[in-house]
Image (tube, one colour):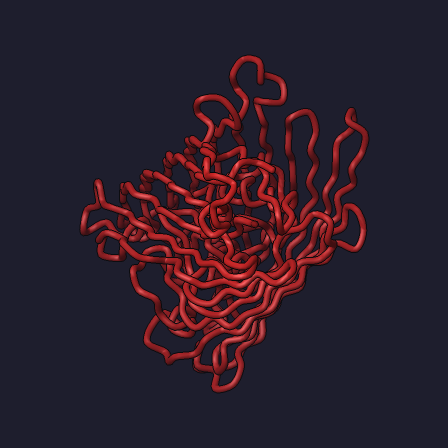
Length: 473
């Protein structure tokens, strides 16, 4: 019995003109292309409850250190459909304020969360899953929209984002209906009040630490985006309007051919709109305890129009390549990363967070022709100060500079930009506050040629997660 979609969402948490800061909200992912980052990187880029899936087997759900666990006490003769039931309750409040580069302001404060249910299996094969999501405005000025905590007009979110039947066969699961999808290019992007969810049919391997590969394939007809109560077609989501009724076929393979090496291949296809591919390889140089561990990684996103070229009315073939070098030692995590985007177009990423290594809180440095380079340093206070009650406390800084961007239609240059991120997070793994998280994030973008040279954004989020589950085996 495996809790796949619950744990994916257990943790974390507007388009602009070419000369604007272009807030993409892309800088927050659950898992970076299948290779898990250190928990000291920006919290939006890594959800440890999700990465723990590497320790699961199809028959065992381990202890979830970032949730308050309450165990069922069903009699042994109870049907597995009820005995193996999982119920997750997430309470969340989130405040976001941004001074936009065009002189306007975005502001929202919301409260809500979700209630999710996953049944046990009938005959060791059939089960169901459902989740209801809500986000209610606490402070949401009508003339300051865009936070994506609520609807575009600052209204409440209330939606059954998940409702699907599932069939488990050996170590894989068929799913049909509304569901979460967790891949590098199509994912929940759970960095606001509620995640993206999708409607379609998928086949996924269940997590198993003893298997050196995982895969997911499927066909998705619609998406419910983070700030919406409505499911729209995948083509409408990528085109930003009423653009037809095309779905997206996708496939993903993660392969770990040897210890320390993780690779991933993925592709999705929206007929008459776009085909997007992704490839990544990361290698971890694990050393003795008194020496730093090193991680070397590289990936590429390849994107091109297809069929009738309905996305932009013309053809393009572009890419974004990125690489990183990361070191972890004595509670510190340090990395440097760079990226380059093709001249033909920016990268379109409407179905979730992007997996490139320069993907930050506000922008992902993916304008046409844009190059970027930056670095980060973070510290985990629990490494040296756990006995002082600081376990679960971390902070960090991340800065990236982008240059050489251009408008692909006119060839005109776009001013260089720089983004600085700072974050502080407290997320205990034991004691009376287990399941609680406090996180605050600051981001500033500096770019000439706008009404405001600096676009600053400040976020504060508190959430608490409770998981009702069967006892540990």
